[in-house]
Image (cartoon, rainbow, N blue to C red; front, side, top):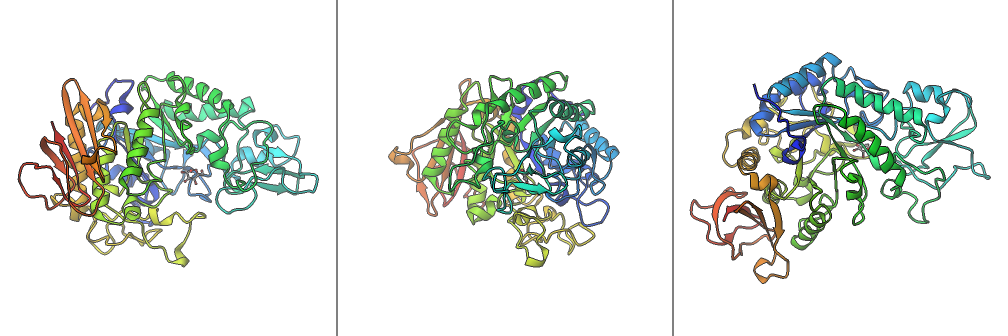
Length: 513
Ligand code: GLC
């Protein structure tokens, strides 16, 4: 039986695999993936070589935002199964040395959460102040100019019964909690304890930078009314995070929290790590917003490495359930393969999104099958497991399959030396065998080095061991002046010969120097 390491910094070494449970694996044949489905695929994940799973929301929810509208933080939605199914998943994962992270949604609840139902019932209800209620502006309109994230409508909804507006940064079905109320804070800490007591290894915290709103809620600058999510960056959030961290630190399993801090300005996200007393990790989405272009990517990697220099630690994300997959954004297999090499060899903790190891593209969603309020269905398409017509799903799944689901089915790729699956498996094995890739320092060769035009070169170093990674961002071959023993290439047709300094179009290589 594999054991989880006792290292309190296990998350620095880990590769985390994000599962969107609705789309992963369906065990009960209703067309929606579930927890038993995830459990049935744990051996697949061990064989792939990841270290931890992050399950997108599985809590009880009316699903207005597919689980990011939580009606009960301490239970599993029936569509995914039961608490017992989750316990079995966690036990099965732990037996295999995999950690499990849950998606904790602290900024807002569902409008069907009992706290909000009480809050909206009367101005005198003890839960009234658990949410953000304000009087109308003098003209009867919303209290400020904030626009909510999905539908371009005001971030405030007027409640006829009590004559005030409530704040919702996202859908009207997702009212924002008022973390300035100590009872809210205590109740939310309890939700963490509930899962930590059951042995959960940590959390991905949804839009966690939004929780500490000020009392004032001033207008956003004109023209930026809908920049709500990228604008809120308040000192109070840091105070709240320090107390959240204290809850996590009181558990023996070294729980980790990675925050979705959706801030894009230089220097912003790293502040959410505090002085090792706030988040353990924070997402930084600048790479995800960068096109396949050498200078642009080099500059993002350089900036992130500088901002997250020791004692900090960065994360890398190419795809998730909110953005088009990188295979779709970059447009070709060769680029997506080279990007995989980079994301698994740069310094930091990589987060993989289920299906990227199959090179999946976003599905085309016909209008009549659109279900997401924000157009994100394509990236959430079901994983094709088999080459059968139903791709291992039994029933017609809740969303259409991605393109070429027969050719890209897991069964078709496993064991094929040229497949995406084999590339990811090899990369993960390489990481696991080479501490220098996990823990080494990193140096980037500057863009003005003439030998590196259109080619990104980086070195990882640890105790005299050096690994060099080179990625050619050009659609034609390139010559580089680096040397070493070829450990891995993203190219499927590389001749079986020692590395001679030539890179194929959009090829990335890993060399031992
Ligand atoms: C985060 C989630 C996204 C969700 C939103 C509101 O950005 O990743 O899926 O819709 O928060 O909870």
